[in-house]
View (cartoon, helix red, strand yellow):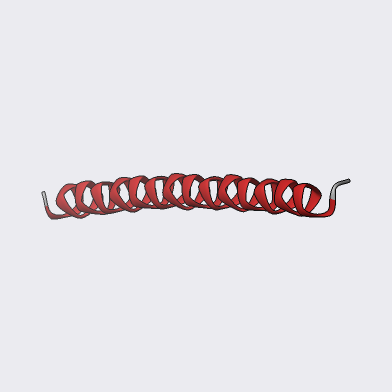
Length: 56
């Protein structure tokens, strides 16, 4: 029984850590893509403002 308990415990731990890893990867990816789109938006706005100011 002890061996089965250890195996079940290890499997649960591994599954839990994999879930945590996937969740953190998804979170990081979503944060990065949000930051990228925000940066692009700011750059576009600055570009448009620059063109408006300088009449190009």
